[in-house]
Length: 226
Image 1: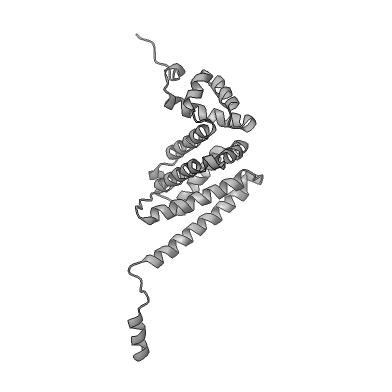
Image 2: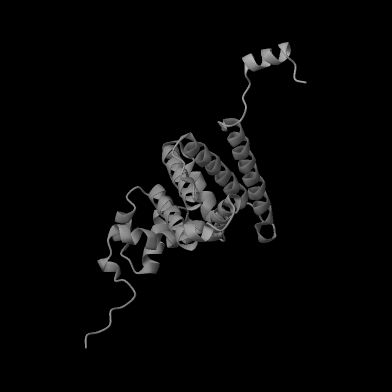
């Protein structure tokens, strides 16, 4: 009988694309103390039994590559933990809330790493990429929530959610309330705002809704309704 295959992957056999998510969480943990730096990368590599030079090859773009990989691991974990069929039994606002809260919980304890990530992403040379990363996460959340819009609603929903998520993260990093209650309350208010906006937009754009008609208005002036 041959030897059973180990469930633990041989790091030497992994591709750079496979190494990236394995290292991302470790780098995020090290970034609390060392920032999104080569020092954090080396600490993560050595802690995972990976040659630091190989780890560097996985993140040729430096800090932004590391941050993007970390966010991608949160995206993937969110999809796995909250599949569309599980969310389908909830109301839309509950779906969005569950998705955002999952992301916050995934970053709990790493607030300093998140704060430092925001500083890197806010640099002028990184803004375009940071916006693309944020858009991708917002798009993924709406897709998990069951949104299939392909018209301008596709863009307005993602823009709104992206803004709310970014604002919630800004509260989250400095929130020392019990159980992050202040962050949760902030998020609930913002989601309620989205829902009100969507309802108002739906009423405004409803093709069945009566719109103002000058002819009908003048007719009523001449022949008032009894």
